[in-house]
Length: 259
Image (cartoon, rainbow, N blue to C red; front, top):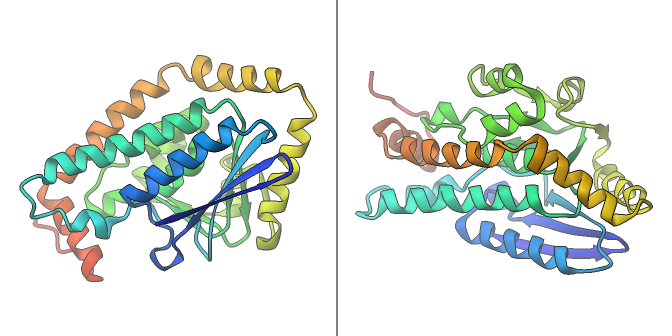
């Protein structure tokens, strides 16, 4: 996966740029995204960060094809735990990054892709965007999305998406507060960047402390919940049903779960 980084005025933009895989997050992609966020955090003129995706998808989640390659490996369990922990650390990094982070979503945000958007402080979406957390269909626990949904919107919404496997359109997501603004596709990044300019008019110390109050004080239990969620997801990956779900995805067929 390639990560593109751009700086325009006070906005630093990180683009998930692997449209052929619907911007799925490989291990290398997570590492590159983490490094890009760290670089932009240190760039003094950048007052806010936008995370977006290239092509017609925001992010389809973790790269299941890459996970499928390790299914028959003796080190499979170690690989899965490592991947879950790696993504967990990325989510925590976004939450504690002192600068505001806005997800500019144009297209589907699925599974870990939805968790990535929810880790951001604010979400702008296009009319063609959708949001879903239906990892259970693949036999995988939504270990990151569930606690983030609960933190942002409450347990009822978390159950609606992770257990009810709802697929929300952008306008539905805005109605429940998951998304703050819905715009046309060509305006998604523009609206996010304009918002950062508006935020940048306030003293950066006050903005940074406000984010810290929200994510580290109000959300003081979130970090431990994410760690527990990572462990639950990694454990689910060791099951027979998850192996079938991942293989079926890689083969492009419906899963055939044991009864």
